[in-house]
Length: 248
Image (cartoon, rainbow, N blue to C red; front, side, top):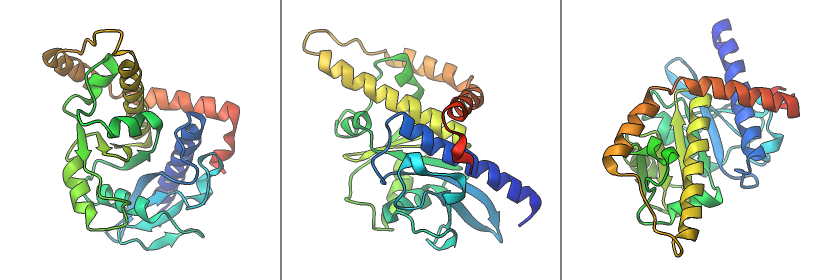
């Protein structure tokens, strides 16, 4: 491996481990289940990605713990196995989207509640509009152990930044860990808003954002996507103050 690739891998390991720790801090974890991954530079034209070793809680994950897997499921580096359903979902995206270097999947209560609703995500708040015409939906097929489901996941995701896995949870993608994390943060927040709104619906008239206005605000968000990097640096500073051991 070239020195440049080694340095890039070190940064990606640090960022992905940080994402796991931050997810735990935000209450996104589901014991040892769910998973985040990030693609590494190819070696001999073989796509590879980092993913969490099966069995660790999110607040235990360190950069050195992450396992390198190829898109055929072979462990290239690491002492632990990975979650098979996680491999199915993440390899589906990594083999279909060159721009989706990072993939995040969660089982949060707001996300799972939204995933059980036929209407999907509604345009109820400014935060929701980031996902206007930018969110896919994938019908539930059971635990994702069937590798044939990968093709259908790819079709459901399309070129969107997020995917609602119906009756299951949420998935986001980004060119960087910073992108995918920020997108997941706000997709989960949009689900929280919708869940809270549904609880008030019996007492109040719901006022959704009109479609034309939602499209306008969505275009505004596209113009400030570069700000995700600044937010990510702020998250890292916060995490460093609390527990920098994710870097180990």
